[in-house]
Length: 495
Ligand SMILES: Nc1ncnc2c1ncn2[C@@H]1O[C@H](COP(=O)(O)OP(=O)(O)OP(=O)(O)O)[C@@H](O)[C@H]1O
Ligand SMILES: [Mg+2]
Image 1 (cartoon, rainbow, N blue to C red):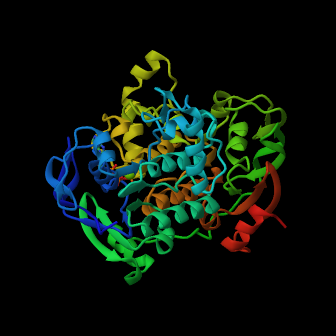
Image 2: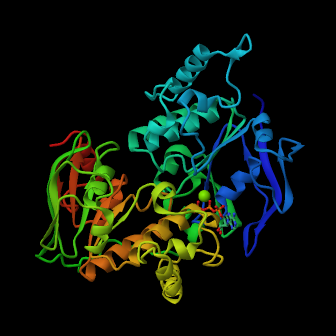
Image 3: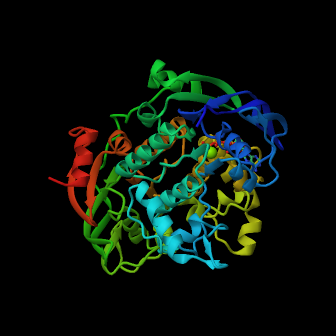
């Protein structure tokens, strides 16, 4: 392929009350991986959506080589070889992996669908991604990272000239990220323009050739990765920020607020027991599929458990459910905010109040004033970037949606918070804010169970970390005694 360039000329995108992109002129050339970074709400997804035809700019032009582009339908961008993988998954759950990959263009033979070829071609593409996913499997049965891989595989199947990946690794574990990077490098070496959005800045030295930074809709600049260090990128993203580490003065108290005793769910986790003390931040580390999410759901009662009990402040819960646990002072922010954490077509204010208000009709109406107070408090404390609390949750950027999920539960004044991947898709600054919330809560005697794929985070935030492997707790570490490689090793293999 000869050299290719995709570029914008003074693109502006306005939403009511928000300028998502402000007069952006930027260009990305082939044979390179271009990282696109910036804090939550800075306009990254908006730019990608313009290139892919999902959004129209308010003003300005964009070009592939010398051709001015103008799309009326998303399919038109695909025809030009511009494909994207969004933060929000777009697969159809009721169809197979292969059908999803070739949706709308299934191979035909004698006027009927050639299923044999469909599965074969899908199988080959998946093999290129170095993953074992059965092309006949229903998408609804895939885990989150598997769906993500299928989504990327689908994009690859178009033989793209430009591929845009919007936070593709946010649901992936380390080894899967490496497989994805291999695929991305292969594309780059074939002369594809790769635009790669991520909040995981530690990935950049491995994968990026250039880094383009947006801040509040404006272009801060493009730099060569080899010319900059981590701190330079942070500075471009935020201006000045202080990165905090766990304050040493938080005292874990002696009394046990929650005890999990012999909790088991067939096929997911076995005989899990641990104690959580007042004011303690307890991490759970484990690879994907180790049962972390399921364990939290079992404790919270949102999924059934077969054996064992959860004791909260002396009271035993054997067949818990989320209402009982909420009344006991336990909150859970779920891993998948789109599925369980938020109602996107409802307003921000409503989404910030669901957990804390009873959903009876009159309770909801009567408490209007309380709802406003709740919403305003969290918007301010979590620095949620909202145009207006009455706007729909779907109008928020990914990271700000995550903050709404957390804010919703903080409004319940919990004694114990269970966090399942709270920092997925949020920028360094917002992450820091969430950690600071955990620390501030710990000071007030609130206890936390914190599940994260990012082992660095666990080491930074927690007082103690349990290692979960294949559904069993196989060890416990003090974050001061191990480094990230050692913790990774423990999660993979054990003692
Ligand atoms: N449909 C919409 N209506 C109104 N405002 C919107 C809409 N979609 C996005 N915005 C606003 O445009 C701005 C840019 O959003 P965008 O999703 O591009 O951010 P982002 O950089 O991708 O952030 P994140 O890292 O959180 O995903 C945000 O302030 C967001 O609230
Ligand atoms: Mg985004």
